[in-house]
Image (spheres, rainbow, N blue to C red):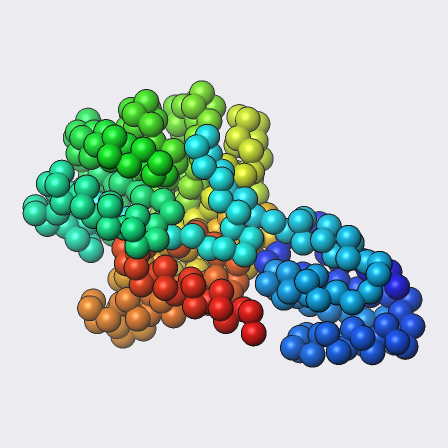
Length: 357
């Protein structure tokens, strides 16, 4: 028997195609027996079989592999599709284990928790502690709102909102992985000087000033295409986003940024008007984006398109958030940027249990 992976020019966590060729009848019978859960397999002729695995199915398949030879070939295929996201102080193996990336806003006009009482340092530290206890792997601070119709503020004011929370979180929780959501180079430099691990830019590090900073500091990144600059590669997001992120990956590589430092975000909820169709299409690009071999962020938490398109009231959006996050994880999304840390942690645990049986 020979084991040959197909489509090796790209990656996948949902459709890994493996051909088993030159099999004798006993080997084909054994393959059928251990692939009884796998509906997406085809007997090509009397000696060949084609099987389509998710990364979870491939992992399980390797564990029960019955033949004396061939296991190393399957392990090589599995390793090729591994998804790692790392920075100077952290490394997440996301291949089989999605992570919770908790949002802690320090802005009075957040669509979710914008309120003066939520801006005190005591409240923020309690919130971070609670999120870490409830399963957050990353805590992200945001100093200004980027929701549709937001009012911009100066970089200096944004930094003033972030400075004390960041310093105190780093002091109180030295092992925490801290991300900062900002599109300003001025703010990026200051938070990196204060020990931020990850920079999340909704504009995708789109200026020479930002790129020079990234080259100097070499942080982990979240790179978004928010759609506000329009389409440049195609007339639809399904072709636009893979092309955009492939070019961005090359650009960052030239600055010394490894692929393992980059997480990409399809930018749900930032453009496309009130219908919500653009948002739904962007979240459905998840599987296409995994073909780049980069971690894909799921950042849809309670966003307004759920009311516009799915008829969900504001207080019902957690339901639709969890449903859509589950589908995006199935498609290969691995970093869940959320407001509801505990509920998301439970979703991930249940999702992983589902994959076992």
